[in-house]
Image (cartoon, rainbow, N blue to C red; front, side, top):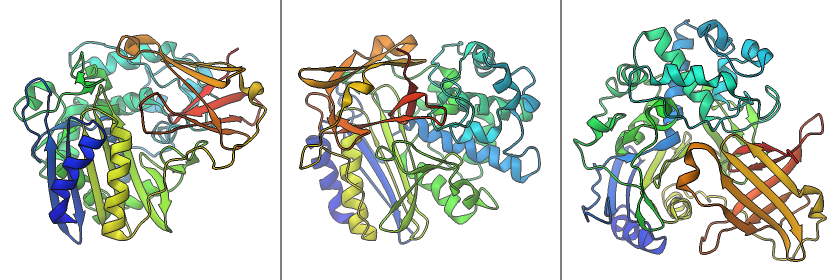
Length: 436
């Protein structure tokens, strides 16, 4: 596989219309690196194994790791209330302001509406200003009631690190992880990234209108790195080089209501799943036209990181993982959920309505042509994404799949209720409440 992967990577990016990709994997103690395609279709600069890609929300595992380091050192516990560490912290719900803990933030169970993409400037106080702006954030769901992906919570987590260290999150990251591990191709600020070959994201085959997200989102998703550095980070987790008890981060904290997208449970930072009886820890990331995936198999020591800069990137990384893990560890990657061979009859009218949270509006309609789902981005990222609409196909009474025209990847949606009967749809790792 190692000898053929360079050729196979080029074939896969062509199949999935990905401009460029880089791959690193650790197997049997040996690191293998590959690259294919271009960093930017306008410049034609080739991708190399050392090229830096935006790893997006894989950053969250790094932020979570630093907080667990502080917990091991006695500076806090995972059940310390955020308000004790950040007295200025505030969200719209006064009770949540008082009760939310570090654990809630790192397991995406805070219920704080999580997709506030707010530009608070390029200054070193950008994360501090972002946390101040959280005062208006409403609850997406009651504290601890379910799992919903929360970027905002990880920016707050990053501010805790800044407050306790008296330094920028970027500096804390370097001091606690990057420099101890000797990672030479891991950076957070554009002025550092531009010293290297750096990928440009692509939307609809063209360079994206913006290179990166606003700086305040750093703790939630602004690391740029080569795949080999990301593999080294995960290896340090498996081998105990960053934490005394890294397995504490692999303990399930909450079931994911829609287990068909990323995995079955969320741990502390890590997404948790099981393939053929083997524990899998992973995380993915998406920015503006860039995508990254990191998987690790603690039982075998195999680690894979792949990065891409556009195209059908999610389907691409799944296809690559399916082939690679079968070859390396004999593991079957669960296929994406797809329509059943035998159509299922479901009364879908009960799910019709509008579901809304910060940054997104989902409209489900039921007509003669069947059930339709429309997704609209709202807020700061609305200009970067056109509304998307596609039919839903029932898999069972609560689970549906659909896909965008021309996209090979199926998207799963699970309709469910909280303990109090409140209706939600779980889509894209997020719980969105029905509002009308």
